[in-house]
Structure formats: structure tokens, C-alpha cells
Length: 241
Ligand SMILES: C[S@@+](CC[C@H](N)C(=O)[O-])C[C@H]1O[C@@H](n2cnc3c(N)ncnc32)[C@H](O)[C@@H]1O
Image (cartoon, rainbow, N blue to C red):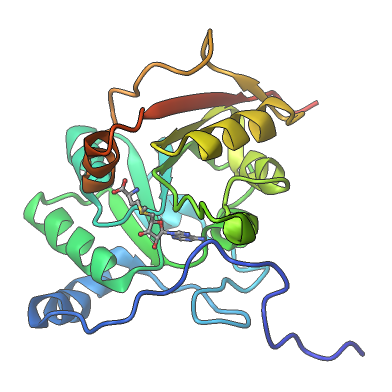
């Protein structure tokens, strides 16, 4: 029998930020997580998802509706805005930054957004194990950590192997939307997705137009203030054979 795994085999695209949550965030966590937070069975780490623990979206959201998943939702500005503007669509925020998740729950509660759920977990494992195959209409990844030093680029989320994981979760015709202010990462995203058998570009020309459902966050403002171009990309999942 193989020995049980005690650590992840793949590098992850995050370093968990330490620091205490504020009292308000702690309160939000306690009061609001029963309503908003999914708590999947874990594998080797507290942010992992045990293989074989897929949710039933119709049971989680209480209806059949289009599902949008945001990976690395940060403080939740984009997803709370989208969830309150589109009550007929369901949303899942995937993040490992606890204070950001607490802030997202507070804002969702204020906006009375019932169509939003959150999960504190490593995104590739959410796509592989938590979401049923072909259950997702759109995946959004805005300003993923760029890991710009050469010795760290292997930590980038959008790299070889990622398209297959995203394609599994997306329905036929579903969309993967990306944005970054980091040129080298934008080029890598375009190369990786451009060579992926399951995806076809959903834009013409070099880059996609700015996605109008994307609100401006601190990361975009910071990139723009440093004179960096913000680049969007969008890819459509090809129909399964
Ligand atoms: C640079 S921030 C951008 C946040 C947000 N999208 C925005 O534009 O404001 C990247 C976020 O992705 C999260 N993240 C990175 N890798 C992740 C992973 N594998 N699973 C879940 N979240 C991840 C980080 O914790 C961080 O909050």
C-alpha cells in the first residue's frame, strides 16, 4: 500500500499571509461563514480539497443557474459587485487569504447577495475536486500573483497543466477570463492558452478588450500607477468531442 501523502507534490501559487484578522473580521468569520463559506473535506493541507468531494451546485445555491468562479478573489470587490448586479447568476469566490474572505463576506452581507459562496482553498484543487465536471460557465482570474523572479515563475498559476484543469470544470462554450498588469505573465498566459487543445481565443487581435464586468481593484490601480499596461485575455472552452 502506498504511504499516505504528507505534502503537496506541486508548488502552490500562494504564500499564506500571516497576521491577525481584525476584531471585525473575526466576528464576520464567526457570524457569516455558516451562510457563505463552503468547508470541503481536506487532503494534506488546510487549503487542500480531498479528491472525490465534489459539491452539487444545485444543492449549494438552491437552484439551477449559471455559475461564475473567481480564483484569487482578494478582498472580493469584483465578485461582490458582480453578484449583486446579477442576481440570476451564482458566484463562487476562491481565495486562501482569510482576511480577504472575511471582508468579502462582510460586503456580501451588506449587499444582501445570496447568490455568492466562498471557499478557502487552493484553486487548482477546487477546479479538480470540488466542482463537478462541466459545471462552470465562467472562470475569472484577475491579477494573479505574478511571481516575477526567475526562480519563482514555477509558482505561477497559469502555466502548463492549468488549461486541462480549467477545461474540466468549464461547460462546453464556457469562458476563462484573465487580466494582468505583468507583461511577461500576460505573454505566458497567451502562450499557454493559445497552445491548449481545449480552448479557442474569444477575442481578435493581440489582446482581449477590457472585460466590462471587471471592477478596478487596488492591484489594477497599482499596476497602472507604475505605468504598466493592463492586459485582458478571454478563451472559450471548445465543445467536448
Ligand atoms: C494579486 S492578488 C489579486 C486579488 C484580486 N483578484 C484583485 O484583483 O484585487 C492575488 C490573490 O490570489 C490569491 N491566490 C493566489 N494563488 C491562489 C490559489 N492557488 N488559490 C486561491 N487563491 C490564490 C492570493 O491569496 C491573492 O489574494
